[in-house]
Image (cartoon, rainbow, N blue to C red; front, side, top):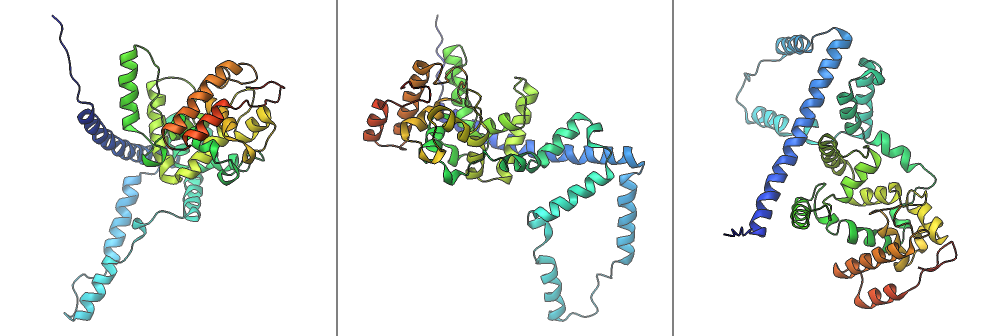
Length: 332
């Protein structure tokens, strides 16, 4: 007797997305709590001081110096004045400025032992809270290209094939993860990934290539933090400048020069589709070594661009038929 299980995909997706949103918020809270706890432990171990007793002493001093809360009069001016103080904007309601964050970081490092001696979990949490320490030096590279100086076809091609809903979801796309899971289960093998461009960027810049559950959790946490600190355009720019694109080329500037001897701003649609084909398997799809495999993937990129409205049917047909001149003298 055969038993058929009917899955209502829409209902399952709604439940999954809500559950994932709650899980993401919970991860942020756990991360912040762990960072505070680890910092307190490290501080106490290094200084020999008890944080709880310090806080208790400061609380007693504050209570002793605090003026009486009972007003001497009942005038409306006094009441309104008190209300204005309590309801005015507070520091907690706005994010820290770069200067304030730098000052806090300097103070934190001053009271801590050498960073190389920190426990590995604390090092990872500190790195997550200070991503700019890794990202800003990368942006100063002479090979870094601003998004505005890259042919529009390149980011559109990458988004179409890698993460077509990039600008409409958060750091983690619950719908993509669920879809990939169902497709992979149906196929009996991994044929589709569920990672967003943000997650891919985190893997490229912050993490090792190992495939473990612990690394996946790190990836999710770092992705959530990254999207809190940077805009979608900034993340897309980082992705295009840090992704390995085969033949020893990392980033759009090196790849454009390596394959087409062009600047990123001069790439045409068919060339942009080749670039977008490479993150999937940069070494295996290197057009200089495997033009047949690369062209097959390029055609898929163009198809996805047309499917999601980045290009018209006419543009798709023209780019699909176009032979691209490569730097090795061959045409793809």
